[in-house]
Length: 420
Image 1 (cartoon, rainbow, N blue to C red):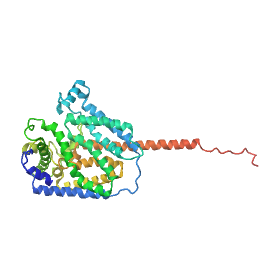
Image 2 (cartoon, rainbow, N blue to C red):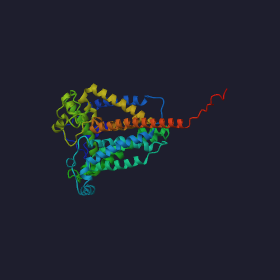
Image 3 (cartoon, rainbow, N blue to C red):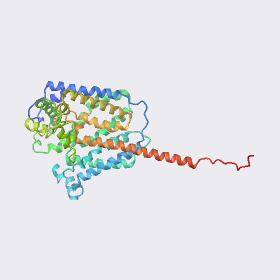
Image 4 (cartoon, helix red, strand yellow):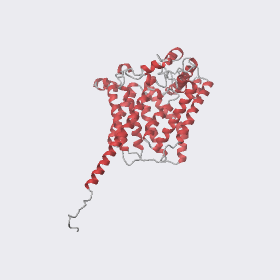
């Protein structure tokens, strides 16, 4: 946070910071308090060993269950981009760049297109299975599903200009790679990676951000040709994070009391399709976004991230915010522990919480509709794994019973009278 603050206050040429500045040393100390309230329970959760005995999971059950989720995500993508996919001329124009469609022109189908956000649950299991040295190898069907979902996700990133979808694709593979390295290197090497790995990743983050911003902003007349490209990229990156923290701090200043409307923490519930979110919004008294009113009144609507660190205070107040971060940290720590042990719950949950923690300076990822859909996918996978496992065990028991009946020895009894 300190680095972000200093970067935003540096006055570098690439910075794009407009509006009233609220972020100061006092808010940095408050943010540090909230980060500590998250970090300590996370460390504690990572030390807790819930079970001493570990049974190797049946990965065949995982593979069957996750293919069902992949099918749902593919179906959602086809519904989402149907006007492009089923029009060869439009598809060719989009791929060649001669046709550029806005988000409003592409549109969304409430309750259906959001199911595309089930794909990260598939990526989480597929990435782990790919790098896990298990006796049961990854079936070809999973590779095919991955190829299809990878293509659709990249198409989404290109057409919808959505950088986060690519992050949700890459994070599960990064975590699986980290797990693979941790189990094949010395403890000293792994400790060095844990300490210096995040800093070594910074150049790749800047490259990734620069590549995405080239298509999103650099090509516009507002920025192109007015400064060096890398000055633009670094300044833009710093502006994103500084304005997010500043927006959150400003919301606390303008609305110092907790609203308990959960505009940020339960945004997915407010936006639930088919009118399901309306009763909740009416119950908590939420009518319209206070945050967007704040943006248009005091800040620049172009940078519309509220920062999870301070947004939680708007929803729940200081003590509620501390409690929220403590709970999130504890669950993240437990999920990390379960991931390292190879449990299904850890493989499904930890990537979600990792992204939430990585995005904590920008916005409340766990409160987004996309995160809720990911959770639904995790629940569906867990239920399907139990069902598939139950059927498999029942069939195995039936085969054993049939085998025992077929090979049971015949007991011969002597005719009456012969034994006298």
